[in-house]
Image 1 (cartoon, rainbow, N blue to C red):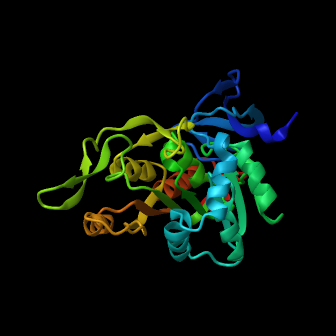
Image 2 (cartoon, one colour):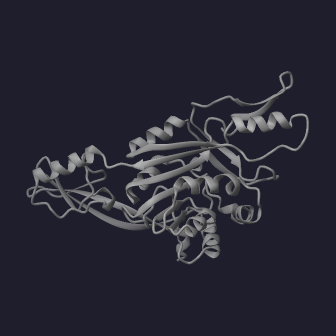
Image 3 (spheres, rainbow, N blue to C red):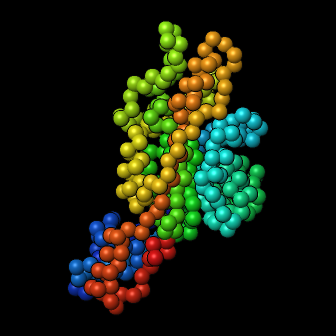
Length: 338
């Protein structure tokens, strides 16, 4: 079996235990569930059994860039004037402030372009992507010390609980449907106080097929025309729009509040936000001045920083659990939540 085409998926059985009743397997835990081997609630005893299975990764996943892996790698590595090199890289290094010895997860890492830069800063780096083709290129072009895995972003079975200092997600979250699952997994693998660094096309100004540049001949002003913003949408886009018969992927548009609410729901607090403009300049012409001014007014990228918090609710649950069942001291807590 070719392991690069499979990902490990963690699953859990939640079993209700009782001296007089046959154990009952549940799909979901009680509301006040705390991750542990055994726990009690309302005079009932529960056990959790964890197992790992392998699930085949489809090479034709709608949101994967595997079909254009070679083109994408060439674009990042050989072209000089890319947004990734000129705008995103210097800004993400500045804001992530990666320290020697930290463990950084490059989630949806592609061909490893950013993972290698984080490694140069002295970090222990793990790269994860759903595309076997992209991971194959990443492994080939990277130092052997960087660990790469094929896995969907919302099921990181290879990454241990509470083992990551920083998660970086660059130009990928808008190609992922289950963002709550992604942020939930980020919470699981991050240490308490760990952070997500999220970079995306600006959702207020860059809405696929619902926003565009237009020019007002009378006032000589270049502006953005936005026809929708609050409505969430799922849109097919060209991976290489400048070429005929380009492969397509799926892009998910969400207003800003969706990201804030989903992060909060998964135990994160947004602690930083920046908007980055394009570094491009127009060639001389009658509209050049207006175009350059518009680029400075309408940001191309949005950066968000979100911190994992140790919530009051979690502390309350722990105290309640110990009070009810002091004999249950064999807990398996998430090491990041201690």
